[in-house]
Amino acid sequence: MKLPHPALRTLLRKAYSGERAAALAYVGHAASLRNPEARAAVKQIEDDEWNHRRNLKVILDQYEIAVSKNYEIRFFCIGHLISLSCHVIGWFMPYFFAGKLESGNVCEYFVMLRHFHSLGIHGHDEVLYEMGIKEKEHEGYFLKQIQHSRLLPWFETVFHWGPGSTVNDVDLDHKYPLSEAHTYCRHFKADRDSDPQPRA
Image (cartoon, rainbow, N blue to C red; front, top):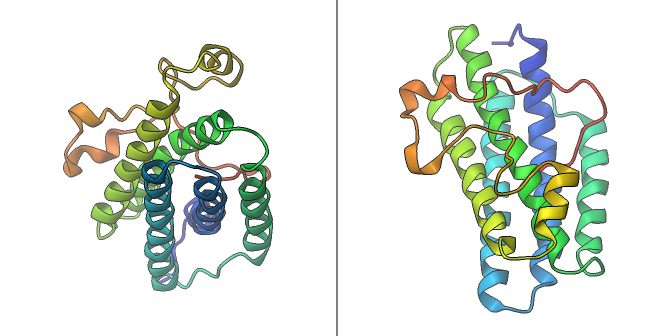
């Protein structure tokens, strides 16, 4: 079965390639950390991103959606560039920008879910819901690591992400059940037709 939904096909391709960029970035992030617990936590997030990529490949294959060579090459380069930069830009920025990107990635999965619903497809609800929630957990972890930094208020003002700014409306303390997951991220623009942005 082929999906008669160009925006959804594009979003799936970008997410698939973006998850590898994120995983590669976290390789460098983890290696740059001295604290073993912090390194293990980032390594776990890397593993989550590889798992998301595997889940997305199953969906792509099911609907005969070819992986984008363009996205694969571009995101591969982005991931390696971020990975290397983590060793030279200090400890704060890798946490901050990972959290900001995770914040946006949360909604992409709920938008996918809604796109599938528009086609009458509900078979991917659980995996998309779980991936969206997992990305929110990642966002929360990164924010927690920098919450007491004196740099955070300035970065939040400039880059519009932080304790009082998030790209999504998911609250882990009051999560919607799976049956209501389609109500998340109603105002999120996930169909990005411009150059792809790195994911986390």
